[in-house]
Length: 226
Length: 226
Image (tube, rainbow over all chains, first blue to last red; front, top):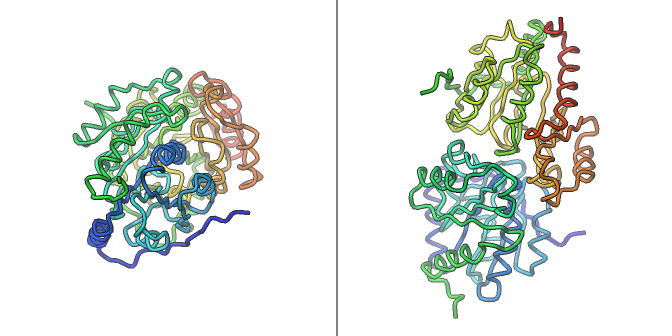
């Protein structure tokens, strides 16, 4: 039914995950490939946001996507529809990816001719935040229906991220979500956090997010901007 | 500032979690105390649903609540406001509770004079599903904004639950959420799953959920129905 390439990744054999992650970053710097680790809760709109991002950038940047999932193909099939290179990483029940697992994915997708690889991490606000994947930058999505108190309840993920996308702003009128408070709480965890309110559904705010991402790729020396 | 009792629970020392869980269930049967393990993603409305449930049942049932959280008191303070006995379990970063950790909570809250103890598990659809806590029944909440595809992406949690609460039905008009499909997918995972569409915000559907819960307590021999 599907032609998605599925990789059953194994638990990492590296004792020192942080060192392995640094090794991946060195490799990515040499290859001028930018790896973005995208995290969020289930249902916050990671895949839809990614579809919008791909649509906005795919003409100027060579993009690859690694979809990590417990065991389905739901998201990978949507991403494959955009025409960018994508693979599905099956974690075999594991709730996060570490550096070794990420590297298995990078080897499979082939990074040399890509400017941007997005790792769509397992939907979970807890475990993925604890493992450095080797990504150049970490981003997370918090959606309006989840509530503005999440930086108080899941502090670590807000601390390790460089960018926070606040998705589903189109439904703000129907939820008791305080945008000023969520910014205050998130910046309390991480004063350098870049915050992007967006609606992946309507496209609102996607440009600002993509501009930030393009700036990051430029800083990384990616060659796609010719 | 807060008078919530906070318990820093330790990682379990039991090698055989399933046996420890069965031991807890035997104890709860003798004490006629019903333990409900409530799981969901972050932001699906666990605490609000619990507040509605407490409001509906607290006059006829003696209720206690154990709030498990990485490290905040946000939810426990709301629950304490209802007047029911509550404690906060801090997992020290751990993404789930196992049977040994749950028992530490039960010992601290004191179960002899309670009919119903609700364990509000850590917000996560992956890890909590993997560990039997010793609960008599497991329930989960999926909220409308998370999407109807979640039983396809997080199969285990739907398999281990006895009841599925579909929360935030008040915002159904603003999301592409197919109620028939979510029921079909969830029942595919678990044909015995009881499904309760509710709005914890408006109170719609809470009665049916509470009736089911009361039936479960009756079957367990709880003495609160006098």
